[in-house]
Image (tube, rainbow over all chains, first blue to last red; front, side, top):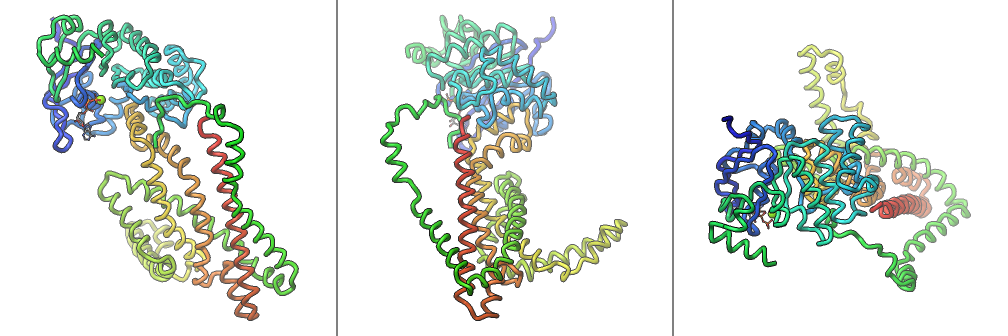
Length: 248
Length: 293
Ligand SMILES: Nc1ncnc2c1ncn2[C@@H]1O[C@H](COP(=O)(O)OP(=O)(O)OP(=O)(O)O)[C@@H](O)[C@H]1O
Ligand SMILES: [Mg+2]
């Protein structure tokens, strides 16, 4: 049998911020097309782990391999790899001086070197996919949180990434908007996108995740399927954490 | 500054009662500004109704072109200098960062009048010397045309007009650098992270995402500094260039009509700065109106 087709390999990842040890030796392999959900208490290192995957944080120690390539400090190479990894932030981080459409075309033009027409066509296609084609010419400040997050997803998808990273994409949203964003993510998962999501939306994890990773204090505590984790968690810490998030 | 509101802004115009608006308008009306304009108008009438004043005015107004051209040119150069020095201040490159900080702190530690003397009579000759040496170097490397130009460059060839512009530009470059730095730092770091996560380089992110927002935020401050520079341009009169201050001094010294000369000079500056301030306010207002559209 062939070796598994790992699109992300994280080897012995450590990240320290001064005295704060955010990550303390994390190893993860993620196969192409898989959806991995990361859960864990506040400050456990979830965001740091995600941000190391596209080198927004530079690891203190350890290796990140993306589709067979080792990440280094070589900026040009990093830019190329980052273009292949979409990232969606908790606070959207849309560019407020650009319209929804311009938000989606900018990187296509300056990074992918697409023509204005092509970039615009792709942007409109992505806006349709996230369900808000009518908002193309609207500025982020006039969109609801859910709409802003969908534009942010469209912006990432327009680059044709191989991997999508989500850092608590729904935790800044009003409850009535959470579903519209999760639906987009569910569609994406069904289409076979490789996804790494930091999220405490257990409904999403149950229906989309191939694997759930529970991390605490910068270490993986448990890594298994959603069904297994919810019905039969092995570790005490996992049980405690699950009881906390499931009862609130 | 929070540039990514998570909650959509409500339409604020609905809930504010009519009365509050008109009260606010009365209270916030810039009466002092009307006062300034009245003073300017009164003084202008004064100047044009008295023979002595008219004569002084006609003599001094000639210098206004120099003042405007010098200020504008110096300001454009200062903006470019300031932008790069401001970028240098936030650079993670230790050398660039320290050079930019050195420049800014050096300028801020010296009185402007002294700086103008220094740049005109010490800075420019040293720079010319340096260019001469580079010229010799280029000649030895076989770059004859540029080399010849640089070696033949003579200190006296740099007119005082040009030195005045250089002095103002170098000085204001340091002030504008701090404005640009503050503007860039007012943009949340999520903007840079989002740009980089899309594969943009640092330069692309600055150019297309950070600077357009930062510059828009600091436009009023930049405008105010232009007004300040027009005023400070009076200091270059010490270089014996023919700006309005120098021309007024000449007129006063020649005619012994000190009062006419300096009243006229004062009013001319007032009118210039008033007109410019109004322009800055107008631009600021337009920007605010365009903000979330
Ligand atoms: N830039 C930074 N500088 C200093 N410390 C940091 C930085 N980023 C993260 N940390 C620290 O690293 C630890 C892990 O942070 P991280 O943001 O990864 O946690 P998290 O699991 O995402 O938490 P949350 O659920 O609150 O988002 C925390 O103790 C945090 O304070
Ligand atoms: Mg986090």
